[in-house]
Amino acid sequence: MAQSDNKQPAGILRSLDWWTIGIYLALLCFGWISVCGASYTYGDNDIFSLGARSGMQIIWIGTSIALGFVILMMDDRFFDTFAYVIYAVLILLLFATIFNPHSIKGSHSWLVLGPLRLQPAEFGKFATALAVAKFMCSYGFNIHKMKHFMAAMGIIILPMICIVGQRETGSALVYSAFFLMLYREGMPGAILFTGVSMVVYFVVGIKYENVTMWDTYTSVGKFTVLLLVQIFTAGLVNSYTGNRKHALIILCYSVGITLIFALFSTYIIPFDIVWVQLLLCAVMIGFLVYHGLRTRFRNYFLISIFAMGSIAFFYSADYVLNNVMEPHQRVRINVLLGLDEDLAGAGYNVHQSEIAIGSGGLQGKGFLNGTQTKLKFVPEQDTDFIFCTVGEEEGFLGSAGVLLLFLMLILRLIHLAERQPFKFGRIYGYCVLSVFLFHLFINVGMVLGLTPVIGIPLPFFSYGGSSLWGFTILLFIFLRIDAGRNLVRS
Image 1: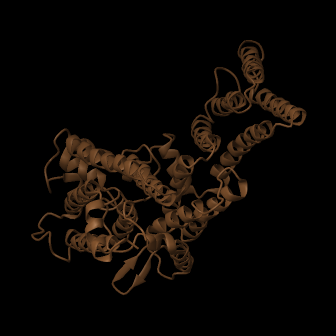
Image 2 (image 1 turned 45 degrees about the vertical axis):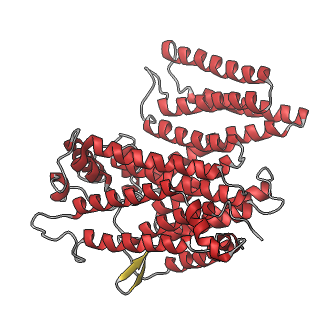
Image 3 (image 1 turned 180 degrees about the vertical axis):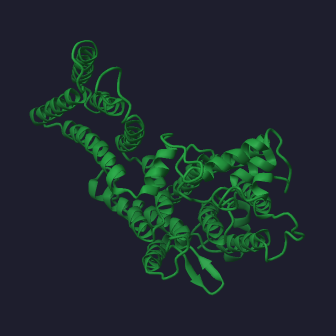
């Protein structure tokens, strides 16, 4: 407890980070204005009516502020003490939702309680953040021990599995944002590098798979991916074994022999160079395993696993895309990679969103004067694609202002997380930061056609109570933990 109970509220108010609260309130205001613009129809007279989405959003905003106030009045140690209990309750709720008979747009992620609809996945984020923070600050935890790292991963992956079972893949992917927190807490950079490499393999390999190199039979996509595997492996050998000679051997032989056969295939006898590259990769992996056995240095084995896993991932991803995925999922990926346009189908939302943003120009068309949004050309324009309303009505300046507010929030969260005196608060803070950063990057990128359309809300902007409550709880728990950092305990 604090030293004196009657001094606790005053101490909390003095310790609260009012800058973050001010940014939160500003985002709520701009978010409501955007919901008004996105949901307004010509002829509507009352934007405050509860029959309109803008009116209902006021209710969600008011209840969110009240919820934030309640959280601030709680003891900050409550969240540490009951982290596992909160997590268990949310996991049970997420699991039960899989069998929910109510289907909304093909998803079983909503619980319908009379007139109220709740999406448990939005609340699972703060529960998961609390549980993983509790586990990682426990005595003896070491992220470099495989069993500890895998246990932390299990806490993160379990809700993802439940949400995928609800056919809500977009919401499940949000939980991958916790990798940023794990990296901050000491997760080996090689793991993060591996994740980024997989994305590069997929994008480059799939996009250029059917493009042939010069006058040969070689796929540019496969050739580039296998060359990247060799280059990345050489880099890892240099970084994690300290043996520059072995790194240069791998790099020079791989690139040199590949270049020789590429010239041979181009000017003498055309053939598929990929077979030569696969053979070089096999020799490279054998070289790493041999030196691992000879030196008994584990990193050689791990790097060989990286090389084998990279090749296996690329070929399995190619198989899954072409033989396992549903046609509409395949079309979405092809549209994102620029292989198809499909402006009337999978690319329609993004195309109309880009038109709306572009039509706003520098200063925008003004509040409630957007044409693309008023005529309902953009689907989901008050939820997943709400940022296009900002671009159309407020223009480039308004969009930049909103992004600047989010940037201020992100920087403020980093500052708050770094000043935490206890590991629990720091880990939870970076979980909050990671979730907000993921939502912002993916949602805005989705509207601009830069990231996949996976259907996640823009924090404090998208219409709906579940997402607004979920983000508010996530943020205000951290503000409450931060406010208790200087309280004297007895």
